[in-house]
Image (cartoon, rainbow, N blue to C red; front, side):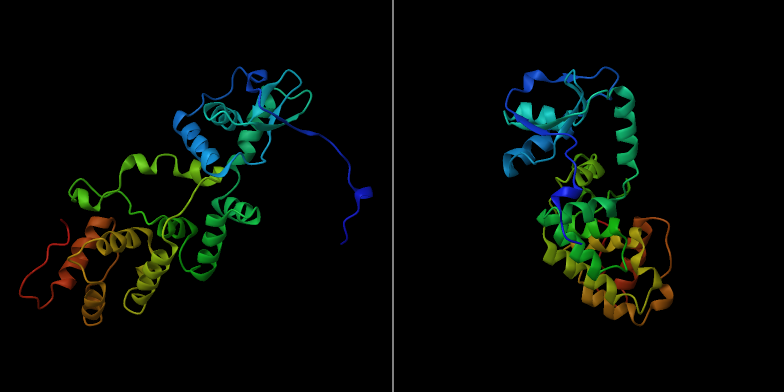
Length: 263
């Protein structure tokens, strides 16, 4: 279908300003999240201000985009905005509710369509590895490991602070990903386990393997070779520590020098 200006109607103009003092925080809106503001501020410093306008009413009360505005204030950036007359706190709540109805997949495809590179790479990774959930694909591409239990070494734990509001980072479009080649390498290794264990795509099993892959005492291909002859030992577990204990038992089969994979 060809584009025709005659079929389009101008509704609201987009403005740009460096004077951020003209905006007001609307009473009754949720309190701003300082960590979220810092992340957006860093994104603006790295990538510039995105042409993603905030929405204000005729009184210049911010209906949507208070975090973007505060981040722009923090790094002295300009901001785009749209004025929609008659909007108030009710529209704030409606917008927040509608945003929560978006899934991770919606955000991934949306930002990929906008040309944001990490989301494009994630979309391609997910397409190649659809056997895994999108949440686990994000974990692969973030090169993160999930938090361990209190019985496990700090070596196997991620910093809790690094996982705070990960969904907000992803949904806001500021998620970066890390080593996508390593992500594919790790995903391929998980797939090699499929002939010997149907639960290879369970999130907690993925977490256990990703943890072990960071352990210099663990050789994945040695484990895979031993698993071939001990498939009856591989069974579903309720947490990651149980999986690591099970894998450790399989890995130490016929070894003179037993390896402790828990620490």
